[in-house]
Image 1 (cartoon, helix red, strand yellow):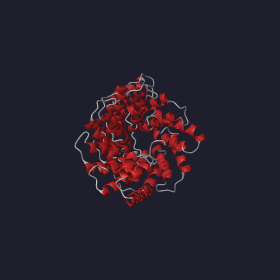
Image 2 (tube, helix red, strand yellow):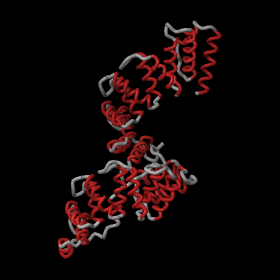
Image 3 (cartoon, helix red, strand yellow):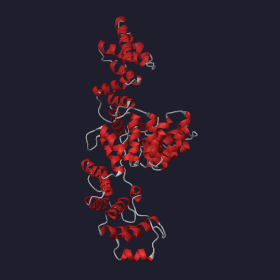
Length: 466
């Protein structure tokens, strides 16, 4: 299964959004330059654009920023907005999110819709200002009311997920439709997500695909990914096209698409099976922060598939993913510390990571944590907590945990009630395919036939209900 939820939200801020609003870039000639130097704001913007685009001169973001700043200081809201984004991305000026928001606020306060849109995104992301959903919604709404298409799309996303506003699928649909009508790819993609999931509309995968295609054809990475993911589930014939869209999204920086390309390469679905290619795609996503890709890259290093076998590298990537709270990575890291594979053996750290993964619901970690607690590895013994975690793992179907519960209940000091419980757990392990060996037969010697039959009935009933 490819990674990602159908209705994941999208909030964007992009220089590309603003370029389409600019005056056409022109070659710098003496007349324009002299007018710019004399204080003509329009000429300043033309000179800035020429340096930014490299039209008629070598590209020079520093010169572009210089001329945008002159126009911005003269009060031009378009130049103020452009300068803000140059500061945000560190183009031609030192990267400075705080300076970016100062310029956005000046332009937004004058009522300039594009600046209001970008200022809303800054508050929603916490770029240069404390993250503040209420302020983000305020400025996004201001821009949306002025007809800024992507602001309308973003407002649809906010209503869909109830971020900074009450969750309201009707309002989400209305704002997304407005944005889509005005050509917003984010709004089109959001409509695709709503139709795919059936949120606020009747579920319709064909309509979802249509909206995704519209947004994907505008080079919107989120839609390229969603279209690729949707096609990957349709048929083998669609899988080939799915990989085309996923690769486009991956090349445009979508981490989920990069992870998906790695997964498809590893599985040989729609792409030639190749662990080398899988490792390449996982690495691109992992280095950009994808926890799932970090985990899978670690697994490749542990097994030596597509990369040289290297437990230390495996631990490195498991640690990155575990640091983001990915439960399977926490479990793998616990195993590495317990075994001393790729890292120094450390039962305290193993117990810590088993605890994290167990609390996250991982069956393997719950069984391992129970074992550590029962024996006293990496800390004090705690029979009660060991019983709790073994039971949690057994409830999820782990026969090893059932076997461990049988061993706990059959200690030398066990009562008849404990022995019946022990036989019950041994029978559960056996029914789930794990032979308890002589332990079960030896324990039954101490029980009456009635007790043994009761234990077997209890085990059969327990397995049937779990």
